[in-house]
Image (cartoon, rainbow, N blue to C red; front, side, top):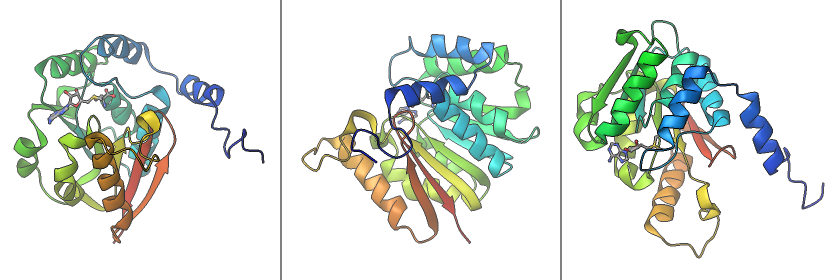
Length: 218
Ligand SMILES: C[S@@+](CC[C@H](N)C(=O)[O-])C[C@H]1O[C@@H](n2cnc3c(N)ncnc32)[C@H](O)[C@@H]1O
């Protein structure tokens, strides 16, 4: 294997294929075109959305918490993988993003009982959620916004459940030992905490801007 051909492909063409492979519904395409115009970080790439759906299906998810709903794209993918009676709890601190998520769910005819959209920050909302009651916790956006809540987020996950954090490979700084900006430091802290937690089995998937995944073992 040559240095130009990393394991698994690892090329821009491969990433583009992975995104094309993950076919989005017309409602997802609409939600994406709305979300890219909102301020803040962009929505998950299709390949990442598809992995979220597969992970949700893998744990037969009935309850999922999404930190940073954004315009609802990750939520639509999660709902696709969750059980038909599953409930997604998605929070966001930006009313415009929440409005976009609400529209995305309405356009996709998500039954009102299947999605709870909550305005607030992790600090405000996490104390209202029950520890061990969630099959999956999905974190998006700046790690600085939720790094300090990582223990509480992990507490929400039931044994056998999954935690994901998206974006840690963005800009390639996490692997650069000289990079010391607050965002990269927060990512390193999150990755280290997850990797060193003996109750977790974890991996980094180099899709989109990088997906950290962890399963809670008994
Ligand atoms: C990358 S976007 C989420 C995109 C979403 N995962 C998707 O693919 O559709 C990150 C979101 O986190 C939200 N956010 C950032 N900091 C937050 C905080 N402290 N509390 C609540 N939401 C926050 C932002 O408003 C933004 O909508």
